[in-house]
Image 1 (cartoon, rainbow, N blue to C red):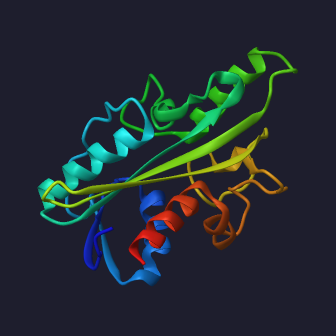
Image 2: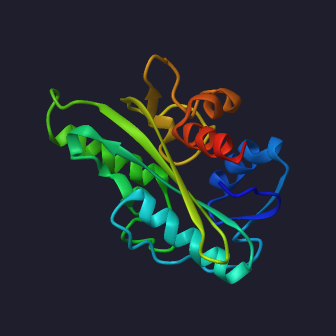
Length: 203
């Protein structure tokens, strides 16, 4: 693992995700700057899995900024829906009548409606996956992945977190990620697991 210090581009325009990554990176002596702050464009996510999408975002940001870049690709995988929405989790938040807006209230309703259509016996089991890609301008790259199991609930609960957090209760818990103290979420989440692997490699 290459040593990492100084400025690091967080290759995301998602404010919630950037905030969470800043918090996780805070103790490790790097200076995170978001792709949005640098006015970098968002590349099209054409990968077939989370690692590929994270990699293409990190490589694009590293090339354009001339700095190491960290990208996260993450999503909700619902067992009864064949692990959808998966890599399309953010796209499920785009309503047909508002193509420029991501509405995760809409996305959560879509997930629940599809589950309900399968009947009351359909499993509510789900997991979040997070893939991290860390790329340098010279093309060197490293990858890390984390996962957290849980159950979906309805109606959504809590106004903390972001994305699908208000409908996801991690295994062994009673609160959704949307209700949970964010320090506790950072300790147990899929992103936290991926970051633990990243930090172990940095050490």
